[in-house]
Amino acid sequence: MTPELRWLVWSVLLGLVHIVAAAVASTRQSPGGLAWAAGPRDQPQPAPSGVAGRLTRARNNFLETFPLFAAAVLAAHLAGATGPLTAWGTLVYFWARVVYLPIYAAGLPWIRSLVWGASIIGLVMVLLALIA
Image 1 (tube, rainbow, N blue to C red):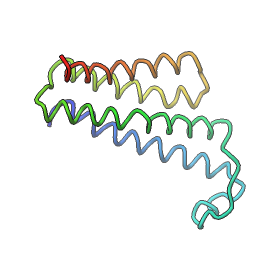
Image 2: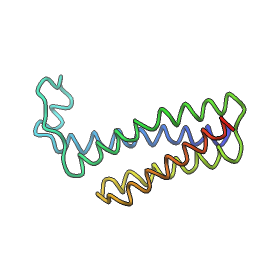
Image 3: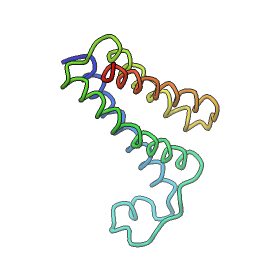
């Protein structure tokens, strides 16, 4: 398996961490709790706030960038355009996204934005390999 595909797989697992963290935090905060989450969810619950809200927004942000990352990695792999730039780009994207989750949960705004920017740089590195 190429380094790019390996980081893609790890990113999928990271996506699952985002989903579970947001779901657990939101369920704990919800007035209906686990019974509401396990049921048909007919009654809307208030939007999560605090850490649960930040974890939900971090999950949403991950889900916005991940499809682009996955498409770029797969396109580079299929085009045979992998190399140092894509290997480093996937590594940067993954680790920036790992760091992003706890920073967002902690509510650190400026650092969060810088880390998000680093993940975008990683994604752009993969794209550059495709268009260069």
